[in-house]
Image (cartoon, rainbow, N blue to C red; front, side, top):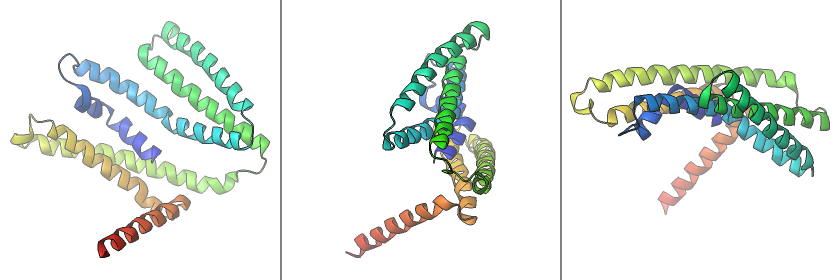
Length: 217
């Protein structure tokens, strides 16, 4: 779920922030600034999730020292990059967030690389090529669908007089576009029988069977 959520947040960041916070002193300029920060944070969110999973693997292997050392190095590097992005490149608040996302991605890749060194043959990279390309294609389709659907729905709802000055005209396009974008992410995965989709299908079937059983009694 991390990828479709990240895509939706990146595509609809300005709209999400406007709906949640834009009122009184929090004007359009503030929404633009905060939405740019949200996008920068969202870019790093998949790496946050992967890093936490890798740390759990290291602890399962009774090796807590390596994740600790990498975390310390990441903190130091983050401080250096914060100074560079703000003082030298004048990136402001966005520089702080980009630095954090970059360091998170780098530490995740380092943890993964060292885990492969510790457990040779853990990952079959040629076998992963197909699933990775499929995920990239689904991500592109999902992002495009979310963006196009939002623009179309926003134009349609803004033409309805009763909704023109209502926040519902902002909220509905975001919700519907997010749903359609998420659907278009998972639908090709089901069609091409992506490995993890079998687990999702089993969970859905189990929930439906439980619901039918509850309704029967």
